Figure 1 (spheres, one colour):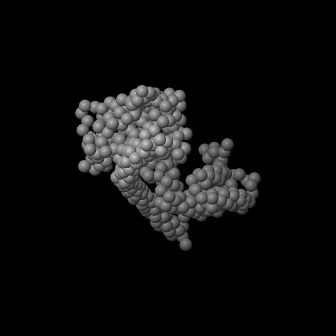
Figure 2 (cartoon, one colour):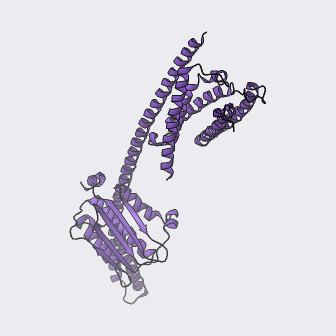
Figure 3 (cartoon, chains in turn brown, green):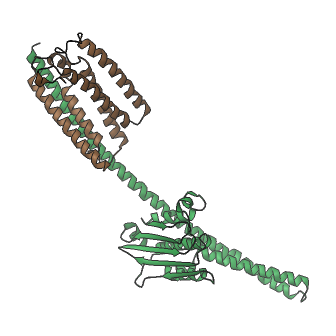
Amino acid sequence: MWTASEMMNNLVLFNVDLLVRFTLLLAMFYHTFQYLQEKRTVIVLLAGFWVLFGVDFFLSNPTLTDWHNHRINRYSFVVESVLMLGFVLRFFLYLVRELPVANLTQYPLFWVCCGLLIAHAGTVFLTPFMYYFNVWNNPYDFKTMVKIEHWVEIIRNMAFAIAMGYARRSTN
Amino acid sequence: MTLQTANDGILIATIAMLLMAIFIIIFVAYYQQKQAQHQIMVKELQERHRQELMAAMFRGQEAERRRLAQDLHDDIGTMLSVAKMTLNQLERHLERYSPERAQAQKTRQLLDDTLKNVRRISRDLVPTTLERFGLLAALEELVGNANNDLINVQLEWPEKFDMTAPALDVMLYRIVQELVNNAIRHAGATHITIRFFIHEKELRLAVLDDGRGFDIDEVIQSKQRGLGLRNIESRLSVVNGHVTFDVAPGRGSRIIVQIPLENPKLVALLT
């Protein structure tokens, strides 16, 4: 396995992480949404994202054999952020309209979506530039933005931890 | 556009996005909580309304029974008595041992039986003892009527028990009547015990019998057979009470009714 500590480009893992993460989160929304139309939309968008990801992967890396200069996808991260913000807002609309739970603060999916909303709201304007900055041996220039990105990711992970805590409590 | 300008622009846009995200989260949490509280309030109101409807329905049922009993007693009972008197007069004019006289005697017997039945039905519809002398006397009468050579019904009544509220008395009487009838008619019980007691701020009524029992799920699902039991549950729901059926086919039954004494609805009923 390539790792940064061994001075090897591991951005391909970053790309794969996007695909896995997006697929899993859309699976979560698929199970959460009640209506068939919404479920179909989730499947279509997931399939579309897979296609986009594949095309983007090849366009962002014309020379696939050059692993040292491998780059992250150019458009996929932007699309992921926008789609995820849309899904989270749709989920919040569902929460307000359908009232699936009496106590929202103990509802795991609420925390997951809070984390996702903060994380993607904090990085949605940064993602178009990630392709240019995440190049091997090229330092980040947007220092404040990078700090914000780290902070929102910390907040997202904390929200996920709270969600897992509540999910575990409800299954016990 | 320099890198610094782009950086500032993205930073401002990101901060704006983050503020919006936080606002959305707070709004959703606040709005949902408010909606949930509103929904709980609506449910409570609906439940209260349902209970009031139930109470009104049972009051109407009792009033209708009273009217029916009065009509039976005053109109049909009186007419039957007059018919019997007329028949007696007619019988006097008939020759002794004639077939006509025998026919008249048979008709009189039929009239007697009909009068008895009318009185019984009238009494069952409105237990006058309950209205005049209270629940204990009415239950003693009920037990007395149910007791015979084959069936032994016992009533256990606590010494310190001064629950006197007509509505509650009627409710308890009807429940006991239904359970005793079920035990005799459907379970074929020969020993029935009716027990009243106070347990942990609850009025409890236990009806125990040695009958052949029944399958509670089957009875509840059956529209006809489960009517009486559902009626008990409906009556109890008015005062937040509930009934527990410890029953199974092939063994005696144990049915326990629990009514919380410290509940505002019961207090309202009692006053």
